[in-house]
Image 1 (tube, rainbow, N blue to C red):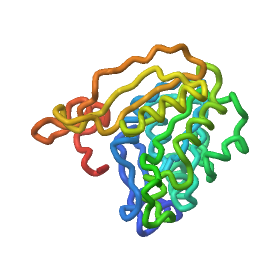
Image 2 (tube, rainbow, N blue to C red; image 1 turned 120 degrees about the horizontal axis):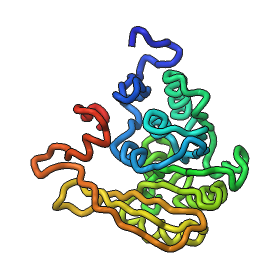
Image 3 (cartoon, rainbow, N blue to C red; image 1 turned 90 degrees about the vertical axis):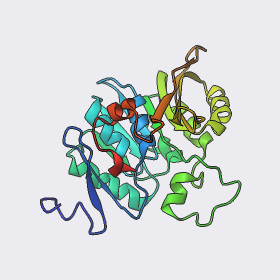
Length: 256
């Protein structure tokens, strides 16, 4: 911390070493820090050197930074509607000297066409809010509430805008909860996004899936493949070998 630019890191924030190509991320311990969902989604995404990528709801900017460490791409535009969170993500981009690769756009994803032309994006990535607001939430201005509930955007908003931005044969990658799978597939098909791959994620081998990964292709032919489930922990409570391989580190508890 002592060698970091004080303009980039606020006193209440911490800098976590991602143990990947020297990359780091700024987080607020009292705010919403990234979790395993973002790591698994970034690992699931496949891109090429020439690809232009959009992320809807970048939060701290973890997915763009992980993708920059693991893959090569032309440019990534990351939308984040929360001003304070977007500022933190922008500072993490600067901290890692990735300004030429990653652009944090401080706007609602519903305004995507105000920033990008339709049909020009190769890949869209999103770890959207999982919960609807049907039951109401206590504080709709709270950062955690906005990240977890469909306060400022819905699942349909994500899918509609992804379809508009994607080129033919472009891919949408998402992570979500199994109870929304039917809604997600219905909305994707309505917007010419054909589900191609699904991988369920189980906390333990004997437990039901609690999240899943999905890839949908713009204008793709119907051909949905289910991968073997990803098991997060062994029966003893340790992370499985595949989880350690995905993280690429021996100690991942700091990111929980």
